[in-house]
Structure formats: C-alpha cells, structure tokens
Image (cartoon, rainbow, N blue to C red):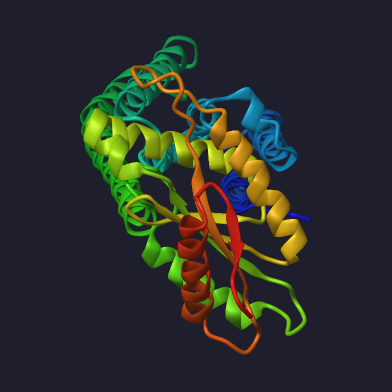
Length: 360
C-alpha cells in the first residue's frame, strides 16, 4: 500500500519517503527554534508547510505512476533537488543564529543527486544552490541587517563558495563514474545475451542448434505426461548438394535461411524447429497426434515449395523428405530421433518430397 509492487517504483517511493522524513525532522528542529524564540512561528509554518507539501506531491507522483509519464527521470531527482535547495535557502533565512547549519543540508542534497543525476546536472544544481543561497544572504543583509550582519553573511557566502563547487565537482565525478559503470553493465549484459544466443542458436538460420534441442528434448521427456502425444520429425532438403554445386555455397546458405524462415512461419507456437546439421532440421511437435503432425508438415511443405530464389532456375521447387516418429513414453529422446532418421531415409528412397512414418 505504501511502496507499491513494482521493484523500481518501490525504490523510488522509498527514496521519496526518506526525503519526507528528513523534511519532517527539519520541521521539528524549526519548531524547537520557535519554542526557544529565535525563529518566527509564522515564517516556520510557511516554510515547513511548503517543503512537506512538496515532498508529499513528489511521493504521490511516484506512487501513482505519474512520474513515468511526466519525466525522462522517473525518480524526479532534479525537481526534488530544486525543492530541497529552495527549502534550505528559506530555512537559512528564518533560522536566525543557527542558519549556518543549513549549509550542511545543501551538501546532503548534492550527495543525493550524484546517485541519479548526470554530471552536468549535478554541477548545475550546485551552481543553482550557491546562487539561491547567495541571493538569500544578500536579501537578509539588505533588508534585515540586524539579523543578517553583512560581514557574517559575506563570511558564510565565502565558505559556501568554496565548499559548494568543490562538493559539486566531487559529486559530478562520482556521478560520471556511476554513468560509466551503468554503461559497462549494459555492454556486459548485451555481450552475455550474445553469448547465450550463440550457445543456443544456429548462427546462419537463427534456429535453435542441436545442443539446445537436445536439452529441450530432455526437458520434454521429464515434464510430459505419460499419456501425452509427442512427435518428432527429421526433415532433409532434397538435392541440397546439387544446389551448392551449381550455385555456390553462398546461395546454398541463402536457401537454408529462406527454408528456416518459411518453416517457422508455418509452424504452431508450440512447435520447435532446430537445425540438426547441414541441411537437416529436427522438428519437435509436443501434444500432437500423428494426424495433426502430418497436417503441420504438409502445411510446411507447401509453404517451402512456394519459395523462389533470384538467380536460380525458375523451375526449381524446393522440397524436403521427412521422417515422422511418435515418441513413446518409455524410450529416450535419441531413440525416437533415430527412428525418425530411418524413416526419413525411407522417404528419400521412395522418391523424396514425402513423409514416411517411423516403425513403432
């Protein structure tokens, strides 16, 4: 109820609540000053109400999800930093003899900013803080010299002019380091994804490779119900060596890629096709009867036969021979594949461009 369920939004909401708690604690200090009669109660009420209301608004924006639509920075770090700077400057104006402590709050604001802001934004926020604080010091020395002696305000500003840029520069450097770490993390994740793709997919056809299909067959054997119908089919492109010899291996690769793409478009979402080796492809058909498997293979056959290739003989029709086996519940995966392989060779012997059913 307080933080929400989405992980990143929970973190942002918790950070907004931390800021709210800090404002509440600062408000307690302000009212201590009111009780000790060195802070005006009306001024304290206005400043405390403004900063607490602002913190509540930011929390509400994040908790409602509006932050995701309103800003490229979902944490709203820069707007919250601006609120903190303005609140701190107002606190400096009303804090009387303890106003020097407000400088520490500005440093905390910059420290929070370095975790989410870009280096340029951190530097800009530190300059903004120094300007606003300097303006407040000038205003107090100009219109309330009894509470803001010019010499003391000048000393405060000199300290701020030394500390704020230095802390801003340090925060900027840390922010830059975090940016580089995030970039390195993204590059590492991309490299790991590429490695995973290479480990599980055939580089040419982008289908699953033989190693990954063996793993999927093992998973299917463990999870399939005893009475589930599962079929495996081994497909071999007819006369592929002739295509390579006549048109070159580059064109042969193009045929393999086109076959894989066309076959994928003809399959159901539950079917899994892999490049088994060379021009051979293994098709896993979970929860499928022999009749349904035949229908899938014939749909794939007609889709492949419609392919045409630039630079090839117009009369060329791409065909494949297929061996189809029903995977028995009591046999290992390799046995079902071997039966499909034997049936596929029978289909070739019988004239190619057909499907042969494996012996049970």
